[in-house]
View 1 (cartoon, rainbow, N blue to C red):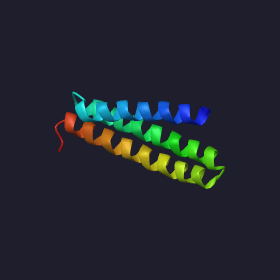
View 2 (view 1 turned 60 degrees about the vertical axis):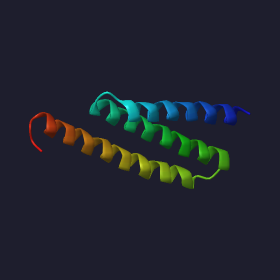
View 3 (view 1 turned 30 degrees about the vertical axis):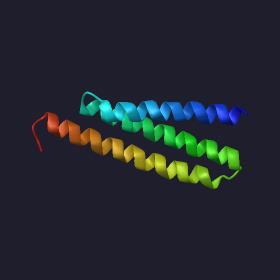
View 4 (view 1 turned 45 degrees about the horizontal axis):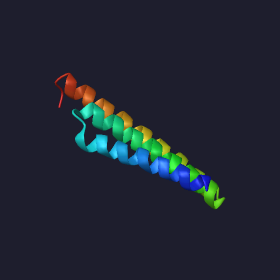
Length: 87
């Protein structure tokens, strides 16, 4: 029962983050919402590891977290370069 409530609340958070991604007033808001979506997806993968009692999902979550971090760094560098006039 608790798993259903947790997955429902995580799904609600994911919908709100997608909403911010779509209507964000500026690019920085969209990047933050994309990072939030990545964190939520990592949490969902960890919850699936607990639900299925399979530790392989945790390895997948770690790899996804590394890639999500690199994605955030790339977007931040891109926005920083754009702010200073570099294309």
